[in-house]
Image 1 (cartoon, rainbow, N blue to C red):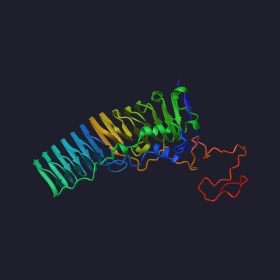
Image 2: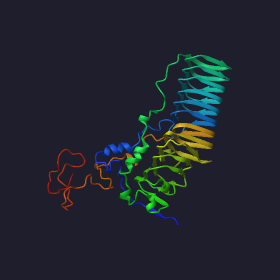
Image 3: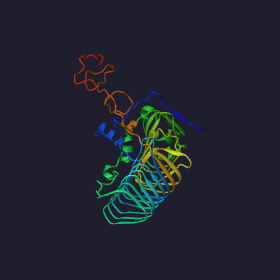
Length: 402
């Protein structure tokens, strides 16, 4: 028997400005803790370390246009590769393949290839450039070290090498969005109480849960992994612990709904998720705090969404298509991977919403602070307007506030 818990349709955004257990922490500080920066998905693919691919790789123009690829470490291809946009292989580049990049290929290290290397714009190599096979460069060839080319070469122009400003991806751990801290902040800053939900699903024994717009926190990851969630609006969901899998068996997004899923630990497998369409990849955003490997396993389906896992290795096998973007520590794969850039231009999960009253009580209500006056008179106090009006209300007897 399937038990379903329906949340009230009138649920309001409590946002990130709800009162937590720590009286020394302001609502704005907690909002920052649970609100990811809007530029986390600025590239189709961003890796803090290496890219290792055996098979076929395609990076195409997607709903968000042409997305660049940034690899702070070394890029290795043993495959057929086609990429729209620029590819920055900061630590070096090695390909045994037929490689075509419509933008520029830039590296501070050495570059070597066996086969065809066709670059639509510039090929800039800070170290040595060694190639065996056909080389085509539509822009300028710039080599800072030694150059050794065996085979036909078609180069539009040559120029001096100019060092890159720095690695393409923001991978200083001090700059990472702290997913674990976000989940910890959501422990006392959520809409669970307003929705009549505990923070432990095991205590109510539900196997199917409908979530209306809001921010929710659950501490029992094992039970969450066995629960089917129906997402009916913009939802931020914070999970304390690790999940075994995320896929269509665990989340269903209704039309117009979005899900920002924050997992303090890791997720072993990310499968096909019914999360919108190719024109709506921002419907699902996954933020991982763990460092364990994450396997993309979508079969013949298409994964629509964005994954932020700066300390995890993202792996794939078989036939994998992603409409969205990936940010990880490394990417390892065997098979076929296609990425169509579809990152949200300005993600605004409910955890980024500010309480319009500046409130900090986290109970889903509109009163910014509990009334210290025990007088049961429900009329408002003669304090300055909560909307920031510098003039106090002239009516001290409970008149209507403008």
